[in-house]
Image 1 (tube, one colour):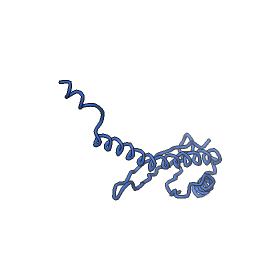
Image 2 (tube, helix red, strand yellow; image 1 turned 30 degrees about the horizontal axis):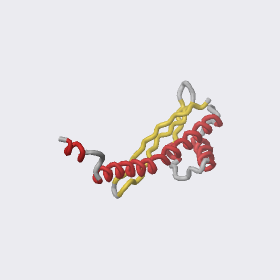
Image 3 (cartoon, helix red, strand yellow; image 1 turned 180 degrees about the vertical axis):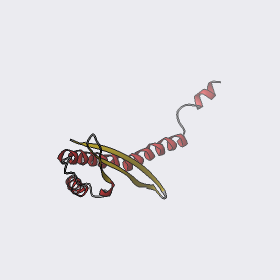
Image 4 (cartoon, helix red, strand yellow; image 1 turned 90 degrees about the vertical axis):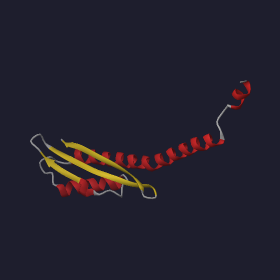
Length: 123
């Protein structure tokens, strides 16, 4: 009995390989997804700034998109489709709506898709 317990200590080499491969896989996934959320944070900042600088009565979609595009350039966000920005006028006021998705290739034909939907009120 003592001999069996003595041999069953610690992880085997195969166990270490599995644990290390899971850690490396998680780190690679994080390195692919983290920039997407950092870029989204810059997009939200630009959207909120655009909403604050837009006049509710004179809101024109073309002018709003130009202002948003300027803010995105200032924040160094270049790969963004500005056509996803829409303007909605309601009885309560004007809203800027932003619905977009980001596709990022992980490995081979495996990709990750992240969908964002943001709303900013024009004062």
